[in-house]
Amino acid sequence: MSAEIQAPRLEIRNIVRQFDGRAVVDDVSLTIKAGQVTCLLGPSGCGKSTTLRMIAGVEMQDSGEIYVDGKLICDTVFRVPPERREIGLMFQDFALFPHLSVADNVAFGLKGSKAEKRARVEELLHRVDLFRFIDGFPHQLSGGEQQRVALARALAPRPRIMLMDEPFSGLDNRLRDGIRDETLSLLKEEDAAVLLVTHEPEEAMRMADEIALMRSGKIVQQGAPYNVYTRPVDRSAVAFFSDTNVLRATVNGALAETPFGQFLAPGVADGTEVDIVFRPQHVRIDFDRNGRGPLPTPSDGVAARGIVQRARFLGNESLVEFRMDFDGALLRATVPNVFVPEAGRVMWLTVRRDRCFVFPASDA
Image (cartoon, rainbow, N blue to C red; front, side, top):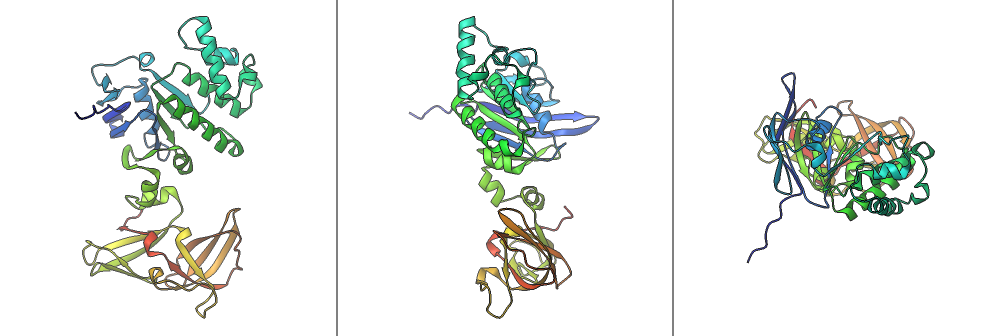
């Protein structure tokens, strides 16, 4: 007998939301399993927060359906009220009640006897390492501590789904990584399906099991962080995760000819212009062409001459900008550790073929 297929914890199907005739969310579909963290990643204004509000029930879609554990909770006719959806919410501003103690903030919205509520509050405050502040007030806490109280409050009713809208953006960079990790651990323990909205690629890569990359109201790519990063769908997808270098070339015989040699462009018609996109960390720097410095490998193609314009040490790597001989283009390369050559120095650059992306030419 085949095992019964379990419905996803959260499923949204073909959601559309329009304002003034413009589709802010345009035919978006997502599924998230229990215990899974999905990041809705994209620039400001692309429709991420509107999608969250529709799932939470504080805004209605114009078309499409929302399901929780296989049961319809909202379409354009039927609608389960927000308070009955068993969905937790966390926002950037934490939204703690200043006149309530930490314990009362966490207990807000809990049902059951006084003893049951107190037990759940104590359990969660122990888990976020804030039990010592149980009788304190929000203004006595740091930003990171307030964020953990907000997390405990959101988890207290044991929601089946947790929606998080830029919850870490108000925190100091020094604290952010640790609190992200603590939050992720606690969410996994609770087995909630998590949809995290962020515009920061690093945050999505750090926290997500899956990333849904959103642009102009649409999800343009979805998958595991490694796949989204290493197999981008277009030039803009590459650029959203990192700086890029772009070479424009014309295809002839399924090959694009560049100053760095030929690049494969299978299936592209002769005469078509393409963009060859590569990240700064995949540029190889040679000191000169006389044997000093590492030798190019066959996969590096042809070396091209560049002149150092500027070099900066960034802490864990160095960024070097070159003015290239072939068309005066500016090309960026990053090097691990300290490498700060003087401006005007001539070097030879090659590009790793296995780290390049070839896309139809665009002005993105």
